[in-house]
Length: 492
Image (cartoon, rainbow, N blue to C red):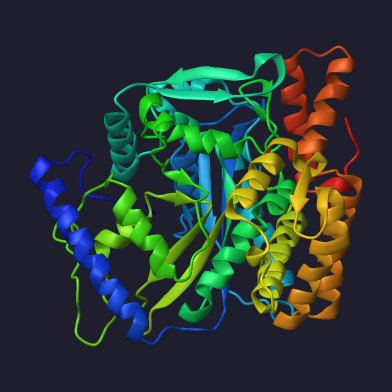
């Protein structure tokens, strides 16, 4: 869905043709996956989404103006007019690669901040912008320009047949609102991690990523407030799931799968995931390769598989498979999508270090973790950790029920650091991120915990919730540039 599309509405005959071509793409991909040569360098990449605010810390609908000021193809629109996204250069974990990733995150954020200031605003790297209101998301100006965003909005509402319902448990009865658009998706800003994987290792890498998704989201939680209410530690998870849910309640009750999906089984091949996508999910954006002027097969090159790639972009797995035909050799990637944006470059680089390291360690284990863990248990752990963050208790193979903070400090972070050593990361780089991750897990002070405690401190001082959220957002934005990891930030 990163590519623009040519229209926002499609005929029944176009949808029928697209379905046929999609299945043809799937057959070609199955054969190609078994016999083709793929790149295997194991490179990594990052996409970072940010929010735009004005001097009063309120959402600023200025993404087009800020992008004009940036004048850089590495910065692009996201779905909300108060969102911005940057795509970092491909790098690799050996040596000082992850330290370079941290430096590049800071550089990209500062460039975006400089551009935002020329338009009277700032950037905030955070999972949910705390000052975002229901009124703004109800206003027609919430959406960024672009046919693909309009098409996505139109087709999801058409498939659902009624308003989008957002119901999330939390304080004061939680959140229960309705929208006539997918605007709530724009509330979700993330850091997406990419890992290039050879075909023979993809299933193990995906299974590993799924098995540690719960502890990973607990460690990185940074989205406790939405529309004035304190909800989950990582509220992005239920928000995103519900904001683009094409199912009315009756289909959800029947067990029809949501398009934002954890999955339901361990896999044996990348093909399993693409096959599920085609078999279970109707097309949202049925734009054929002819409409996009895209060939299916080019002599001497990997198949473009336009329909399959476009369809894959409208099934939002928390760990998504990516096929990229490239310019010479194709490659496969695992896209990890469950982390929020922020708080600081060092925090985000540490989150990336944990993911890349733990996946490497688990893939190399003699008896894989997922062979000792049911998929249902992994899914339950993911939801529990999204709700309670580093305060969650989880069931874990061979350990029983344990605090996730202890699981991280005693088991997973040391193993992730061993994985980084195995990847060839420099000792000082590993030590840098180990210190951040251990400090955060041991103190249970994630970005979410800091936000919750800071708002509570401001409210005890006499502020209203709206005032406290604004003051907290300002304090967060200022400390974002201190470059100290979030667990070292003072409260209030």
